Image (cartoon, rainbow, N blue to C red):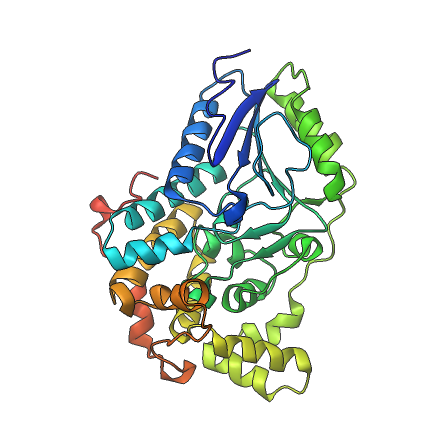
Length: 375
């Protein structure tokens, strides 16, 4: 038993080492495992410790659907992570709490750490996988979905944009499906996630506890043995559906948000009209920002994308500070007052000017002072 066996056994992030694998369980089920700043810090600490521990060959992460303890795989699966803690975002923004800025800086560093992790990182993406949950799973070497997976980047619904590296991984989806997912926030299942390149293999939800347990019982002689076990037990037989995206290209490849919405509203089929109606409910400003983000990120490295997104999220909360910001208003309408009637500014897609959008892509920091300069 190595000294990293019990990094933490209580709280919202449970960590343990079984065999030669580090196991992480997100343990905040009443909040759908939404990430807090302490959770981001606990995840980072565990991954850094295991990265440097020669006795740990791989890492696995899951979410819980009820409070549990490490070592008991039964009935904990069923929800991965619903994203960041938006109630905290709302409260911190109104209070001018510097913890809000720290959250995004440290979360994006965590996202980068996962994407660049030198050991196999396996994400068990059962249940809800949204927003920040995508940020801690899309960098995994193996992304496992199930028949219960509900995946989305729904940020435009609360006046934000698909961050946590969303520009990077959505822009690499086939065709214009990344633009579709970014702007609409559409919820997709496991099969669609595979088709869009956002998952690697689909497994029955009922099989996950046994896989989780078995992974910790293996006696790996060397690191390559882990890759062999993954190929044999996790990814074997996981045929990927044909790449999707063509159905969106006629609309979401168009140059501007207004062109996209006009084309959808002019179409005769129900899907197009319903999609247009969804877009009309999203933040008009953030629809434009998200479209620009995805298209810029298509030619960026992950590191440059995360730095861009850190600039963007700073502007989301500080260009118009406090209650005047789009995310504070969006979160108020969705999660605080629950009137589901956000007062967006501008209120119409047609009223968003190019200069409003471009302001989000001007860094508020010089290069040498950027919060993510060390990535």
